[in-house]
Amino acid sequence: MDTTVVAADESAIRVLGLTPRVQCCHNLEGALSRAYDLTERKAMNPPDENPRVDALEEYVPAPGTVTVFSAPWCRFCTGLKSELDASGITFREVLIEEDPEAERIAADANGGDWIIPTVLFPDGSIEINPSREDVSQRLAELSQT
Image (cartoon, rainbow, N blue to C red; front, side, top):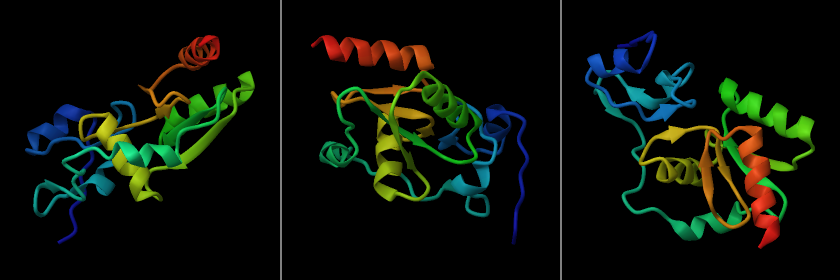
């Protein structure tokens, strides 16, 4: 059976007895069908129980740059990437739906949910849905150390 759900917000998902797993910065637009098996009422591909810190090594950016974990359907990701480009901040984009390890990293950083954009800094720190100003400020702080 094919099930389609249209939800105006996260509360509509909770009414169905589901727990949001994929969030585009608290916006479930485009993510519901990727995140849930509605016939079973459970999240598909649950995140690992134990975060894999060693997995970050592949994604840690060079000094002065960031890694942005994102998805093409996420308007917050698109906005942040445009602002970073306009500001001259170099970033590497990693699409979490195409990279299972990146998906696990984004989920681990967010308590089991994908909340994107998730930004990884050269020191291994992570910020969730930062503004361009937040990214600039954090990179400036890191350059001082």
